[in-house]
Length: 181
Image 1 (cartoon, rainbow, N blue to C red):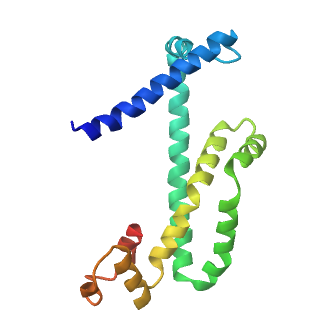
Image 2: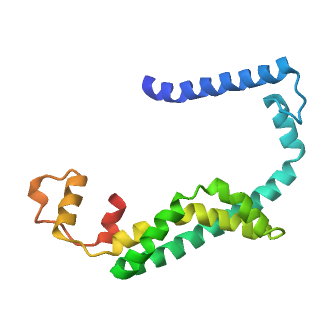
Image 3: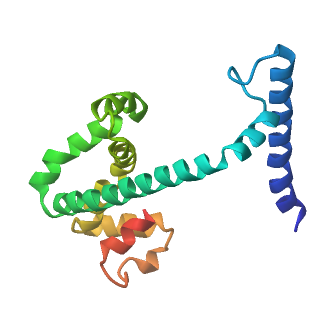
């Protein structure tokens, strides 16, 4: 391993160790009990004691989050394709997507938790959906819109290709090229 590679590993490791030491000292100096602020030395024994609960609830959270992400990708891709093929739909939905994306998701979490009290699966799935949804339609609609000559030139410039490539793009598949943007 080179010296710069070693520094990329050791510097964050040292920062993490220093942080944990300062955290332990802060709790010890103030004499705070575990319910107020647990010290790092108290966290691992508690984690080991309740490891079965962490595994069970960790699995529950994981599958709900994955379901929300998959739903967001599919719904977003479908909406994005419709937006890409129809200028009218794009003009109508794009401002709504921008507005939806502007809402801080952390402020919506308590509202969703209150709306779906007792439906724990729905809470997590909906939050994961909301966080993951916005990029999907935007990318899908830009991939499905027809390309103009200016778009091709912008793409060639963005990948830093020289002027010799202007007339020689191998194909016009914006779905492949939109990932490079």
